[in-house]
Length: 580
Ligand code: ARG
Figure 1 (cartoon, protein in one colour):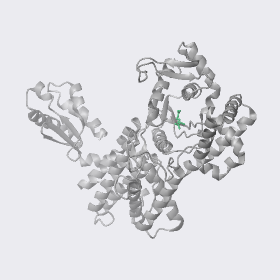
Figure 2 (cartoon, rainbow, N blue to C red):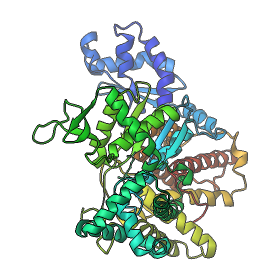
Figure 3 (cartoon, rainbow, N blue to C red):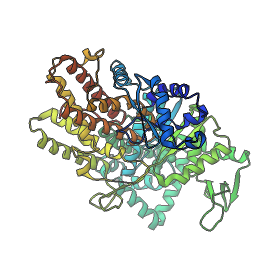
Figure 4 (cartoon, rainbow, N blue to C red):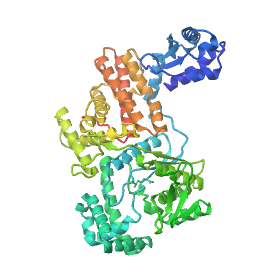
């Protein structure tokens, strides 16, 4: 109800000017009420009782009396237990709600545009994508969509792991197996196997290890045959990543790939610039940066950022430093966001610190690590597939669609054929994405099929079902949705009022969600809106209401509710079916 606070605050300040309270003190006290059902805005008067030398109850009664006349038509004033409570006047609320009927943005205001790079997904070549990459992909994609909606220029970058010393052994292993074995579907389903085999050979077969090391040198020298073999690994892997992205219905495509290899020519520059700035130190043959301060290891010894290893190889951090130079200097971005798991927290803190001290970015740039927790199974362990390895993403997604399909068979046996297949996909994929997005990303979350596919509770199927239900109302309605854009809304029941508040608060909750990069806040709001709709639907006849005016007003509320749900879900990358 920030709009209500905005209109009421100046009027409140004017009407209490006779009291000895500074405008600032009073402004600080006016805020959203924490007891939603009783009030929208609350002014706690306890701190004023000393200044005015009256009990909090007396103060709140006095203030309530003073401000009430000027808030006529905006808010209804009352006082209780030392609080002044303001509740939105249904007339004000109705006119606010009506204003949204013709607003495609549902009250969301654009920000002044910034250029923002969102680094997300970032799986590794010749390795299976794991559930951590799923989280990054789903959360990153939602953040991209929300930022775009707020008017920013958003650049997606998929920082895949496609360079570095492991590629020596991977390429040699590829040669041993024969190139064709890796281009087949079999290879795609066996990435982890391939990686492990290469690792075992590297650790136990000296000859192989030697070949692998020479291969790294050839790769770094950009030997054409070596690059061709490397590309086989990259192409097969990215084809697999694309298969996952397609199933997940995320925005990422080949143009967004900016893997570690893209920065390889910048790595010497990173070393040079760090040396010039005097930050680079030599330690046991390696080139490192010591940040000092809190950066010590368990024994209290200074903890280095390794820039170049003794063998001349560069590190993951070096690549991220090069990447910052590229984003700041070539792309001229204002903001850098990294959607990566919590275990890399220290990596990003240190990289950002080195980059700022070395002047790779300055106070005009913000770099943020948007971290997230792990995905756990019902026993609280890291989620694994049946074979005991990391869960394969495509299998997981396919299973979700199959489960959604059988859930639909139960709920609506009339839905068949192509429609059913299409909707099963929307529900199955939506369920997995929403389960991830609706929990606070900084926490671990438990992967639970029954819960995420349930038609009750804070789940995608529940929200999608509410949307489909409203679509059904319109398919039976004598009035088209388009014709409702200028209709009159009147809020004559509590249920209508609660629903209207959810609609009006959409913009505020989207802002909260995007400014904190916490998609779950938006989820909570869409869920609250759907619940308010269910209560309204129970209590208020729509097509059967005896009065045409009321029918139109309620249909307008239905239209707005459906738009809050579908816009909200769309910003999370989830589809809203018209039927299910
Ligand atoms: N490929 C890395 C991993 O799988 C994630 C890369 C994240 N992005 C970055 N700029 N470091 O852990």
